[in-house]
Image (cartoon, rainbow, N blue to C red; front, top):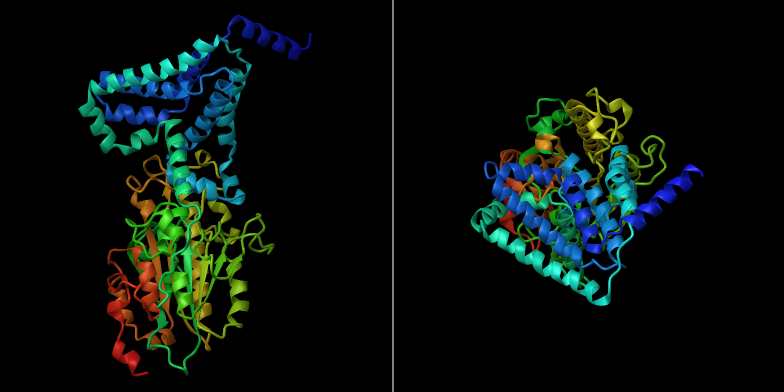
Length: 554
């Protein structure tokens, strides 16, 4: 007999000798998942239940019984194996990101997964990830597939899942009631605890995401700022306007030397007349939330996915006011923000200088911008959506000559890199963003026939291993400042400041003021002197720094 035939024979013998009921198979698989896919869950549990081993055991048993009760709803001979195989693969995938990167799989993370691109997601499919999924997902799944499931009569087949569900919930409730005060306090104070539980957290998150999408079907987009008009700064003899809004990606303010970071990551901008705002909070911790939120009229507390897609953005308001508005993208799309204005994707250009790795660096914007500026004959607002510092492949975000901080991590497998190497690679991306912004500002400053300005703000920050967290996307309630504090930089040409009567010293005095993405919608309108009821003056950064008499005299 060949080795394959021997293995096949042995498997057949095991199947006939050790058949398992659906309930037994479910319980064994669940034990396996509890032991192999929940390192973070048990680590947090040991911390929060420190000194209360009995309570910890009771809580763990209650969670096991509740999960088994849920599994039992699929505990029929024809459904149990496909369901358990899916649970094994799911738990292996999510536990890898939870246990190695500190990534919590909540509703927003499911949304990020659903809107990501193959180009973006391929960098997360590392050798370590594949090995983990094979060992703790695929191989156990093959074992489950090989097991022979016992079949019983119709009555027993129907009753066992119902009894398991009922008893599981009842016993779990009894265990939780035995120390309800402690358990409820822990769950209230440590929301990260159950957010780390596999496979519960991703299942709940998927259900919440599905409900959110169901509520947002067939939406009618409400107009915003249809009353918008250009203000008194727009005299007939003036120059056409070009304002560039740069939407940064994954840049955190803590690594900008403009804001006090000890590493020279902004050598170019430091020599340009920019205002760098040091205390700016993001609307979210991932692009799918932060990007549409920052261009919307809603503040962070009032924003939701449903509101975002059912209301026009500030780009629409500018369009209503008579500006030509465009969105250029070198990332994963505009998330619906630019649905009603012209868009251009530069992500898959074939420029050998900037796109050799199959996706483009942000230098790709510069040649396109030079060609575009010559065609401008009307007031224009151009949004550049950067790839910026998007990880984990930081080394792909900058040209080789910009690897200034060494040694740098040159792989998406962070465990193969030291903490310093990861930070160095990230700092190189910030230095390259510094270069692109400086080039853009210098280009704008050279446009003698245009009145120009630039505002840059990142969508969210990034964790680089602090407290065991990497990348971004943590729930906002527990996200560190490295994920929620973002850089915002303003530059205006002399022509622009004179046209709009803006006081640069007044704006510079707000450098350390607490600001957020909430200010962007209203500040863009204020900066460009757009009169509309949609603008809230209290949130307009420029409101108190404009000399209206000076503008009126022009």
